[in-house]
Amino acid sequence: MDTTNDSANMYAPPYSSEDFNLNVGGQRGRNLAPLSPYLNFDPVYLPPSQPEFIFPEGAARQRGRFELAFSQIGGSCMTGAAFGGAVGFYKGLRNTTLAGHTGKLRRTQLLNYVMKQGAATANTLGVIAVMYSGFGVLLSWTRGSDDEINTLAAATATGLLYKSTAGLKKCGVGGGIGFGLAAVYCLWSARDRLPGFQAEYNPA
Image (tube, rainbow, N blue to C red):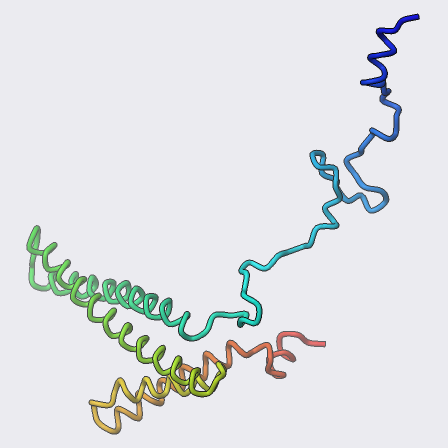
């Protein structure tokens, strides 16, 4: 009697390749869903997606006006600097070519045009963004809600205040421009809730 083989079989029993209990296939049943070869679980039981951000219980599901104000102001300043720098570079090229500047003098003039125009445009858009964000936050806290009315009112008040020192006519023009831009934005952001847009983009 071979006691050595009996002891080895007790702790490590022999299995053949025909044992179906250990033959884990790469596919699952009839629907052929793939199985993980490492953890041996069916991925279909996992939730398809998880929320990207974790919100405290009872908190809003989106950022408010105050949180968005920082990104709006910073983005407006950077956009103004980029746009103004491009315009200044174009003006610098044209003016230095007409003046006949070359070499270091032309490079210095180009830098002056780029920095001056970029800073001026960034300052303008930054001030407008600060006004708009301030009015939006104030209206949200006053009314207790954040909707399209706040956007329209904040944009109109921003246009009126920004052009308030240029006379009554230009003040009204500034308010009208602000209201028009806000109206276009509100229509575009609320296109899913409008029946006309739904009928146009989702025909029956």
